[in-house]
Length: 160
Image 1 (cartoon, rainbow, N blue to C red):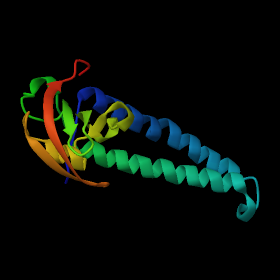
Image 2 (tube, rainbow, N blue to C red; image 1 turned 180 degrees about the vertical axis):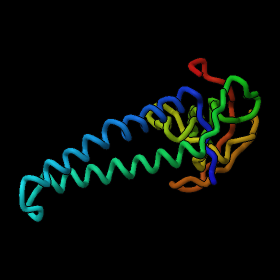
Image 3 (cartoon, rainbow, N blue to C red; image 1 turned 90 degrees about the vertical axis):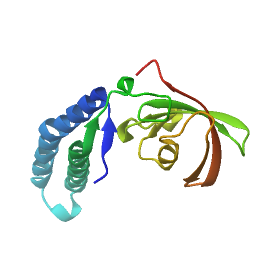
Image 4 (spheres, helix red, strand yellow; image 1 turned 90 degrees about the horizontal axis):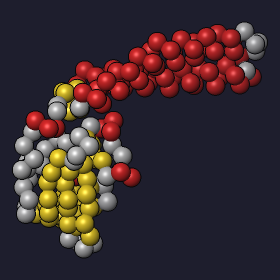
């Protein structure tokens, strides 16, 4: 079972979302399915089919989030040493091939946001960086191919 490191703040958001889906959204959609069913012929009832699709989507999301909750390990990044790359670290990388500086924060999968430089702890890049130090050269097997980076800096972002 793959553990999911997460901050307490992110865990609270996750459980709030899960509770909303279970206690508010799912009952609403069940009611919508029942109301649409009463509109008549189910074969040609677009409202019914749409409500059933919405219900299936909510149930799938609930199952995924329930699974994630069972795998969560709450970590406070401020308690970790950031002399090497770890959960919560912000890493300044030099992309050797592109001659470019990249900055990423290693977060939980629910916080992942590439547009804001947040990558999942379990991503291929993070997994190749974890435990490495400033000055280390890292080869990462990424979806776009093999990339080489040099670690320029590692620190805890002030917004942690």
